[in-house]
Image 1 (spheres, rainbow, N blue to C red):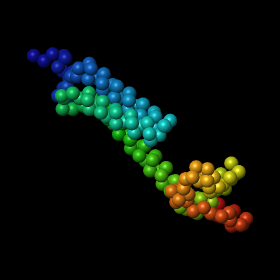
Image 2 (image 1 turned 90 degrees about the vertical axis):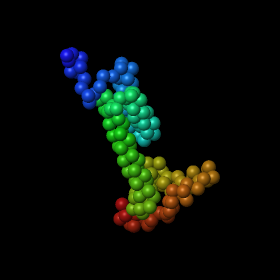
Image 3 (image 1 turned 30 degrees about the vertical axis):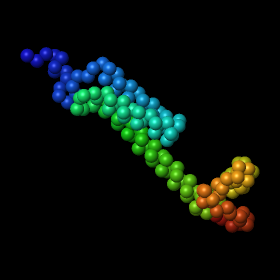
Image 4 (image 1 turned 180 degrees about the vertical axis):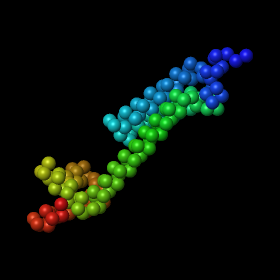
Length: 157
C-alpha cells in the first residue's frame, strides 16, 4: 500500500534528512551572497563564495545520486555568478589593455585625468615610478606620449 508520504517523494527527488536540506539551503544563501557581492565587490569575493556554495551543495547530496532541487538551485546561481564575473574580468582587462595600446584612448585618458586632477595619466605614472622606484610604465606597456600641439590634440578626441 502506498502512503501519502511516498507519493510526495518520487525517484527523482528522494527524501533528504533535515541536516542535508539545511546544508542545501545554506549553499543557496551563500550562492545568493556571491551574486550580491558581484555588484559590490566584483571578481574577488564572488570567486571565493561561489565555489564554496557549489561544495556545500555537493556535500548536501550525501549518498544520494542526485542533488535536491535546493542544491541544484545553489549550483545554478553559483555558476551564473562565476560566468558573469569572468565576463566582467575579461572586459576590464580588455579595456585596460586597449587604453594603454590605442593612442586615441590614451590621449583621451590623458585629457580626462588632466581635467580632473591637473596631471596627465603619463605624469601620474612618472610620479609613481619616481616615488616608489617601480617601472609601471614598462609593466603596463604604456608609451608615455608627449603632449600634442593644440589642433592635433583636439582632433584626436
